[in-house]
Amino acid sequence: MQNSFQKLDPVNWDTEDSPYGEEMEMYRQTVRTYFEREVEPRYREFEEKGVPRNVWRKAGEYGILGATIPEEYDGPGANRMSIMVAAEELGYAPSGATAGSFIGTDICTNFLVEFGTEEQKRKYFPGILSGEVIQAMAMTEAESGSDAFAARTTAVRDGDDYVINGSKIYISNGSKADLIFACVKTDPSQRAKGMSIILVEGDTPGLTRRRMITQGYKGGDTGELYFDDVRVPVSNLLGEENKAASVFVNTVALDRLQIVARSIGAVQRAFEMTLEHCQNRKLFGQRLIDFQNTQFVLAEMEIEIRVYRAFYNSLLRKVADDTITDAESSMAKVWLCELEFRVLDQCVQLWGGQAWMDDHPISRMFTAARVQRMFAGASELMKATIARRYV
Ligand SMILES: Cc1cc2nc3c(=O)[nH]c(=O)nc-3n(C[C@H](O)[C@H](O)[C@H](O)COP(=O)(O)OP(=O)(O)OC[C@H]3O[C@@H](n4cnc5c(N)ncnc54)[C@H](O)[C@@H]3O)c2cc1C
Image (tube, rainbow, N blue to C red; front, side):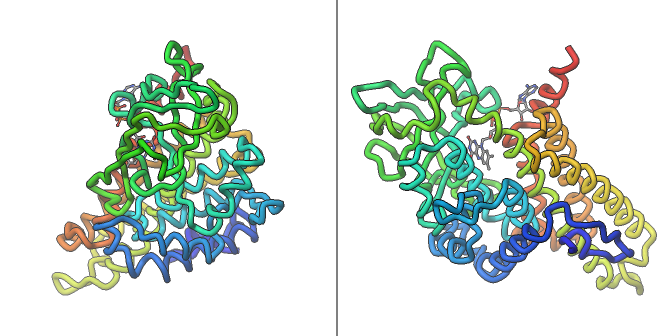
């Protein structure tokens, strides 16, 4: 079974077994077909109004959403590797650089699978599977990004309700989401120990939002959310009060790794496209690939991508066993996202001026690569997480 990495095989690439297994490779093909047929031809439309709802519903029809929803709730019941596969394909599709996190926020489904009440699961799973319910994880605030537990948005108990006040910023799918996983302070005297996750539906009175204009991910529906006496029932609490950290504990590594998966998909696609370009582009009476400099640059890229893939594959096995540590996922996030940026930078150089034009896929992928080093844990924060074990 070959995956996309081995398919590029321009130089007798190894044909090692897929780290995902046969079933997940079939899932990958479905996700790839979805991107090729439903997203790639339309991505320019996303810039103005974000990803249209019918593109989400199509994802539902292809059966690629909510992959971890158990069969007893009419879901596919796939394991967490499905999140990595979908993320790789999001990176592999050049339109992913415009769509932003898009179906990547399906990682929130995992919170519901692991911590949702029966009522929450029955209510939201059908819409998640069909693409009717778009999800968003709302943690970041203007004054607290990396220092997430310094959040100031509060949820105060009032009878059988929580009343939420505050705001969230830079939230992927935030301007459109129907189901917002709001990370709020239920005990403002505490940091992590005062945080809870509360489900807020998109049409709840008191919730307003605006779509933010971004440098890359232009269609990513990145949003700023304002909570003004937003009242939701106590039954919307996800997991236990003041225990958001225990909800995140299993998912933080997964979230970082799905960012890494996106960068793996992106570098592989960028390499494939750039190699083909160099083989076709003629200048000074020869092909661009005939210059030794081009050959060396591509050879270095191939070496880095191979090493990159080997490290990633080793961590995938730990995702499957649920043994991946915070430090390991942080190492992957730092190194692989920095590498993605370097590779895309070299690709831009080989493509020349056309890769500086906004609608060129390599241009968009280059811009998208920049955010990978900042969000879901900036590289410096990741290094601090790794180094915490030394002192
Ligand atoms: C496109 C996009 C999508 C996003 N989607 C979401 C989402 O869906 N949900 C959500 O909650 N948030 C989301 N975010 C927010 C993102 O996670 C934050 O931007 C990120 O956590 C950094 O926070 P900040 O922007 O406040 O920067 P700051 O926390 O101010 O950090 C700025 C810089 O400070 C440095 N720094 C940070 N920590 C350390 C440290 N420990 N040691 C040394 N230096 C350090 C780093 O250089 C860092 O880049 C998104 C952001 C973007 C751009």
